[in-house]
Length: 148
Image 1 (cartoon, rainbow, N blue to C red):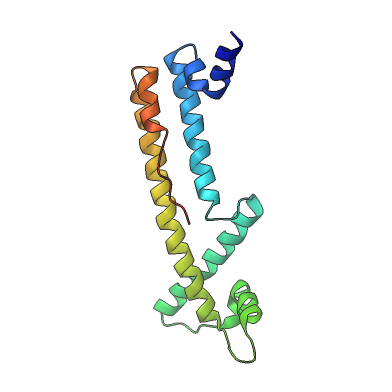
Image 2 (cartoon, rainbow, N blue to C red):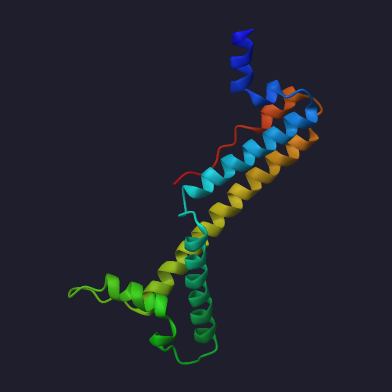
């Protein structure tokens, strides 16, 4: 009896009393795994998310001004100025344009990774929902999440 309880604790899907409960558990496991995969690429937290948004806003504003042929005034990009000042050395000057290019590249990279993770997550969730017996659920749990 004790051994059975331990195996149920290690395998909550198998321990579930019905298919719907097993599916709910599996979906939560997949969502948690997807979030752990995301956290390998970004710094989690609402404050950090806001920081990323501010930087992305500067990238969009810079590119829009550039496309419109407007003047690119460094003071309009305070986050980029801060980074440029931090990276500038006596031997190497870093401009706002350099920082914008860096952030744009990182944003594009993160978007690609986020899309890959979302696709795997959504496919697993849909597969779990379509399972007609608990044993089928296991086919959707071992995703090969992107890694840095």
